[in-house]
Image 1: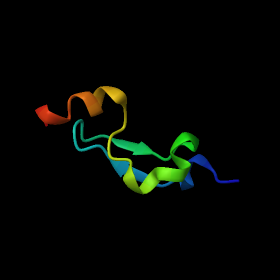
Image 2 (image 1 turned 180 degrees about the vertical axis):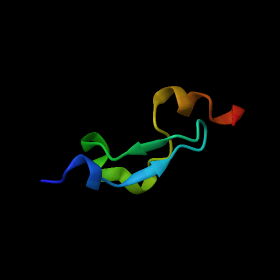
Image 3 (image 1 turned 45 degrees about the vertical axis):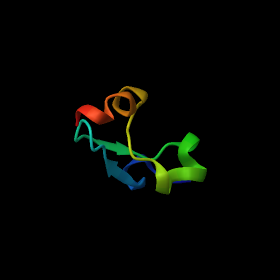
Length: 46
């Protein structure tokens, strides 16, 4: 089991905040770009 501090992290291109790996993204982590549904909706404004 990984500790929270050891989880992979990315930067959201919309809000420029770091977000960490989540269990629900386990199978598709390489394709995850946005930290939330809100950022995904606002991707054109970035």
